[in-house]
Structures are given as structure tokens and as C-alpha cells.
Image (cartoon, rainbow, N blue to C red; front, side, top):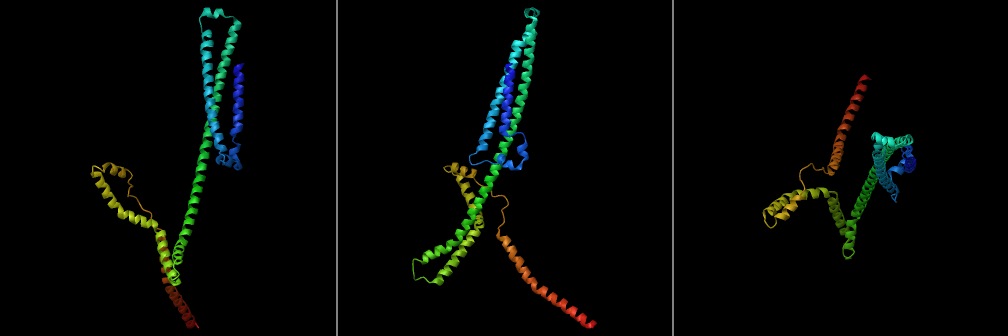
Length: 294
């Protein structure tokens, strides 16, 4: 029967799809092949394969729905009317035609059930491929985020290295213009410029926060005046829409950790004489007791 051949071909397509997608479950149990599922190569071959699978399954589900609809129409218009028709129409058919018609109706009904099972299996594959695609995108996002973070740390380190040599390069360039400048002045000016540069660099967040705290009230006052001005009201409202909220807890400065470390060192140095004096007293007490016993 033609429906049997169609169902067989659909089964073959499903088996070929399982072989291509690796949906048997063995791949997920083998850790050496997880990277082929969760990570993509430079050519994005895994992403392309997943997108192709999703599009193919969607088209296959549409075709299966159409096949089930055609089977229902065939059974409704060509089988059921003659099986449940009037007695006159039944007498028109002989016994052989009735048997053929009943067998065809049964085959169509079985084919419809088989189409439903195939559609359910394709839907399961669709859900599984969707999960794999989401896992691929999530893993790729994590890897890209880590790479971006590492790149940012490297750029930050290179920036600090360049800032470290910046005062020396600036002062040497200025001193190379005039030969009358002494080397002692070069060392002194370089040390002063370096100290100022390093202080600004390592306290940049604190400086920005301080300037923002000083300028924020004046800025809010100017925006309020702009809103009251008829000519500047529209622009003032636009600035207000992008105004940042000043509420919230600010991150403390990293210098507080250095200050606490210095305090611990000072406290430890102050405690050294006390510990030495305590040891001397204990040693003297022990020696005096030994002399008295002797």
C-alpha cells in the first residue's frame, strides 16, 4: 500500500536524522565528545547543523500534519459515508467491495495513528535539538565572556606598565631639549611627576566619585532651571530621562585595605617591646626561683 511505503520512508528519514544528530544518548555519556556538542569551531559548523535540524523538523512536522489531515479527509469522505450509508447504497456494493473498503478504512486509521507517533517523535527531536542549541549558545557566551575578561585584564596590565614609564619618558624628553638642565633636577622632577601620576592613577575612582559628588548638586540645580525655562524645557526633560540615580551603596576604596595592613604592622611593631619585656620577666622569675631552690 502507498501509505505503508510513505510510513517506511518517514521511518528511514527519522533514523537518518538520529544518526546525524547523535540523539541516541551515547554522546552525552562520553565526556570526550561533550566539547563537540557544547562548543563550536571557527566555521560555526555545529550551529549551522543545529539550525538546519530545527528547520527540517519544523517542515517535517508540517508535512506530517498535512498527511494526517489528508487521511482524515479520505476516511471522512470516501470510507465513512459508504459504511454508514443507507441500505439502498449498501446493496449497490457487493461483498468484495465492502471487504476492500473496510480494509482500506482500517489501513487509513492505522496510518493516521502511525503519523501521530511519527509527529510525536519528531517533536521530541525538536525539543532535544533546541536544548542542545541553547546549551551551545550558553557555553559559547560563557567562553566569550571569559575571553573578554581576560583581554580586559591584559589591557589593564599593559596600561599600568605604560603608565609606570610615562613620567620617566616625559621628563627625559623635556631634559633632552636643553643640555643645561642638571641630572639632579631630572631625578627630582621625575620623582615628583611619577608620584603625582601614580597617585592620580591609583585613586582615579575616588577622584571621579569626589568630583561627581561636588558637581551633582549643581548639575541638578541647572537641570531644574532648564525645565522651568520655556525654551530649554524639552532639552531639560531629555537630560532628566538619562539622569542617573545617586542612591545606593558605594564601593569602598581599596586603599582602606592597605591602610588596615599598615595599621596591623604598626600594632605588631608596638607589641614587640612588650613581648620582649614579658619574656625577660619570665626568664628573671625562673632564674630567681632556681637560685632560691639551690
